[in-house]
Amino acid sequence: MEKLTPFELILKTLKEKSSMKQDVYANTLQSFKILKASAKQIAADFKGEVASIDKRIAIEYREKGEFEFGLRVAGDLLIFSMHTNIFEFDKSHQIWRNSYVKEDHSRSFCGIINIYNFLNDSFTYNRINDVGYVIGRIFVNKENHYFIEGKRQLGFLYNDFVHAVIDEKAIKSVLESTILYCLNFDLFTPPFDSVKEVSVSDMQAASESMQIKTGKRLGFRFQVDSDEVD
Image (cartoon, rainbow, N blue to C red; front, side):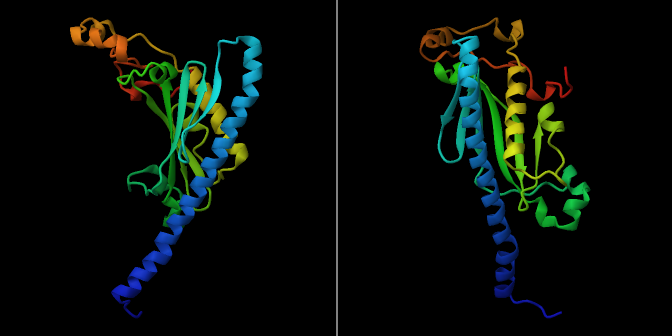
């Protein structure tokens, strides 16, 4: 086999890898656009129904730019954010164990859509010390196959990378599962020992920026939240 020159190797890499990454990016962006549209529709569908139950409950879609949007569901705020770069998995990741990726390693390159869960009040009252959690990461490849790394139902319902193809139906299902998860992920009182001492400066600043930190699992690492179904 004839040895390629550096110039030819660069062209070959651009053709095989860079073009493939552009395909992955295009698929991820299209999926994100569908995700936005689906979130808007869900907010519209639930708004009237929820108002008839209790007008104090808010369901609201929030546009935040091309690569980010928010979905408020009662006291929770879900933020969906698409990363603009393409990633490959570490060789220790379980994705390398399936035949789908072994047959074509370029299938392992994925775009990422992150799903965050915050308390809506954290943004309403500018509580900049409050914490949120990554509850799921959607991975999309060049063939529109996808899977999700996430907590509970997000992790075990959407992990068939070999067969699952992302489309409007799949995205709606992911959104519904995400909403159900955050509604059942309740605010816990932090351990007493973690809040029994408060500085004077914290109290003085509390009226301006609510310095006392709040989070659904404050005082615990997110990983300790069980993946088992209650």
